[in-house]
Amino acid sequence: MARPPIRILGLDPGLQHTGWGLIEHDGFRLRFLAGGVVSTSAAEALPDRLLALHRGLAAVIATHAPEEAAVENTYVARNPDSALKLGQARGVVLLAPALAGLVVAQYGAMEVKRAVVGNGHAAKEQVQAMVRHLLPGATFGRADAADALAVAICHAHHRAGRAAVAQGVRPA
Image (cartoon, rainbow, N blue to C red):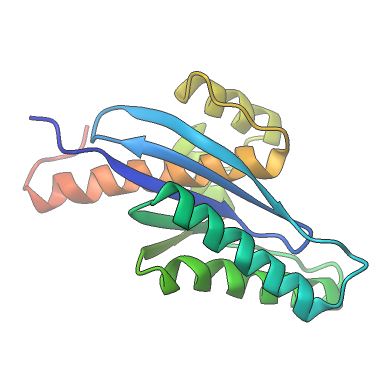
């Protein structure tokens, strides 16, 4: 018996470009609904950029009414200033769906790649190819949106596994 479909919002945090992707999952099938990016300008002050990011995500959530959200963990070690700004942007990305009352799951990059491609060290091109394969008709102008869809797919797979365990069924 198929479960009612659930809308999952995947988010790939970034200060300049935060990718988002919305899918529907009924326990068996995945369906692409929408995707895009919320962008900010480096010419703006950091508080204004964070506000723009929040407003953009709030608009996506209000427009598409997801039921759950999943956010990719970010790892940046090259530049401490960039890492701090990315962490602040990630905080906004976590906060926006939480303020909307959504459950927010978090996944590491390797976990997302493993769920989508089967290899935690897959290249971005492999991830994008599998996103296109798993979500026929999916369109994304930027890699950030494809990454967000991959996060949503990862969450759908983990959700299905948790549901099976809760019902006492061994996942395949």
